[in-house]
Amino acid sequence: MIKLLLAEDQGMMRGALALLLGLEEDIEIVAQVGDGDEIVPKALETQPDVALLDIELPGRSGLDAAADLRARMPGCQVLILTTFGRPGYLRRAMEAGAAGFLVKDGPVEDLAAAIRRVLAGERVIDPALAAAALSAGPNPLTQRERDVLAAAVDGATVADIAAKVHLSPATVRNYLSAAIGKTQTRNRMEAVRAARQNGWL
Amino acid sequence: MIKLLLAEDQGMMRGALALLLGLEEDIEIVAQVGDGDEIVPKALETQPDVALLDIELPGRSGLDAAADLRARMPGCQVLILTTFGRPGYLRRAMEAGAAGFLVKDGPVEDLAAAIRRVLAGERVIDPALAAAALSAGPNPLTQRERDVLAAAVDGATVADIAAKVHLSPATVRNYLSAAIGKTQTRNRMEAVRAARQNGWL
DNA sequence: GGCCACCCGTGACATTTGTCCCGGGCCCGG
DNA sequence: CCGGGCCCGGGACAAATGTCACGGGTGGCC
Image (tube, rainbow over all chains, first blue to last red; front, side, top):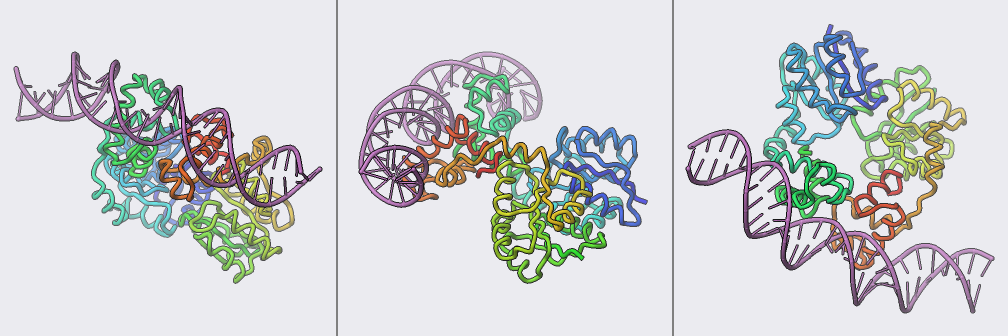
């Protein structure tokens, strides 16, 4: 019996997946969570064999939780299930020690199969996605550039960003300019878009 | 037996819901589509009793399709199922003649129940959402303001927008200014954000 | 007909944004 | 020790953006 932890914020999706996977004879859902902060505690409590994690969750990101989980429960395999097949996400998932990476676009049938393969020690990754991740190259943005860009997401002015990140306005503009240059874009908004698209955030 | 059409772009979600609803004794899925343009043709072909529609789809929006469907198949009830409980979405869904509006956050159990209630002639709407939709008031943006704002989503410059909408750059700036004023925001990005948040698009 | 809302455009203006060049500090690797 | 990277700031300048006032056109409504 494969013991499974399911982390997914959308109630309907979580419920549907739980029911679905529960129908499989060899799978048992031992925990369901809708918040990233609950993943590790619940896992330690219920000792699942596989953790199926969404990336974008309230609280901690599924990727953060994955790294933690690998460190604290090496026997538990991590399978990432996400809406967005962003190259940077895949890269970070691999660095966090995930064994597999699925996008929610694919057919449901893949899911149970992937869980079994992951438990058997295989790696499960969409080949097209892997190619995209490799061709995209690593994240060119520096830590501060990411911070500033992240603070600029919803139309904040330079002053707003400066306040949020505790920096001088002048410095903020310098970082923004650098980020715009590295992303090969023409302004803040495009830079944010490009960074998110690639999973650089 | 309730004949159901299911429109949802995420393969995994669509598959999971289909399997799930298929387990109900009184529900039969007669069609599954992942593209907004396929909704009406498929419905005409399969004659469902209820259409379960996502809003954000490739091709036509689920809301557009809903209006069409109501006009061409008055006997088919429309149930909107969406990730985002935006006031404007709910409003538009009602105007399009939808009988129900569910968000994907809720529990799966609600779904089958909602389908049956809708078929019985009831309206299914989250009360909190209804209140929000009423308090938000109607869409204050004019057609052109929406167009311009929509063209500005991903960081396009004034020149880009002007080209996309076939207007003078000066005019574009005026419309943007008006939209910013009406949304009570400080710049393009915030205006776009506010408009999307409210479902004004 | 007058009023009003929306459409489309111009010109002028202040502010914001993006760029470049310049400092200084820190730490790491050669 | 000397680069080179990242961190943090300042100043100056051109370009883009947001605002305002102003034209004219259309069409609906009273």
